[in-house]
Amino acid sequence: SQQGEEDPQALSIQEGENATMNCSYKTSINNLQWYRQNSGRGLVHLILIRSNEREKHSGRLRVTLDTSKKSSSLLITASRAADTASYFCATYLRGAQKLVFGQGTRLTINP
Amino acid sequence: EAQVTQNPRYLITVTGKKLTVTCSQNMNHEYMSWYRQDPGLGLRQIYYSMNVEVTDKGDVPEGYKVSRKEKRNFPLILESPSPNQTSLYFCASSLSAGSVNEQFFGPGTRLTVL
Image 1: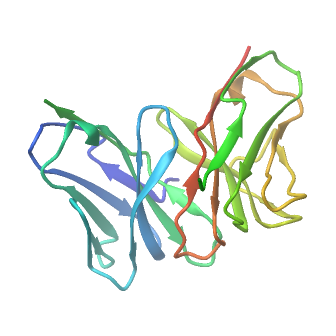
Image 2 (image 1 turned 120 degrees about the horizontal axis):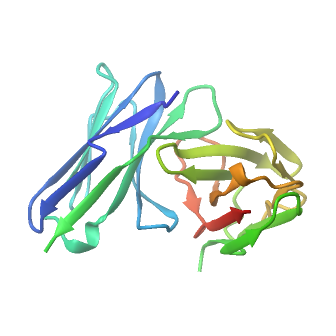
């Protein structure tokens, strides 16, 4: 079963608007990471938030983590056409040696 | 330039014909991993390696083999490919298996098995 599940599966917004994607997970984690994938290409790491952190910023990205609800959100502010991509959350399971990825949110930014 | 490279990028083959997808990283990373990506199923880990000569199964290892004879290389071997192994494959590496490390991904190999 999937450890991380993103919501929504697809999101389409106008350029300049903010985009919010959510991720829920099932078991305790050490950290949660967000990755971006442009169509058919390799994933690129965006940001990592540790289990003892609640919020983190990187440029136009803002990530929150609520361990009590086992959820995280990724906010992209002032979206651009170049932000069109799929976004994945990935959790690092405690005691395990791997990242587990969700199925992703496909984000489309319309000019 | 720090990177993970994979070859080939595209491959069409037939059932049963052994193939190898190479993966190489130039960042002196200890940890390397193979994933496959399928529509509706996301990324699933096939095998991973904590260091040279140390490999272990991921979530979907059946039909695949790996080796880690050198730190930089982590080839994926399909001894007898079948159509259900048609997929997009990614190699990834990170400094170590520690949880604080981001993974660096290769560009992907699109495999079609007829």
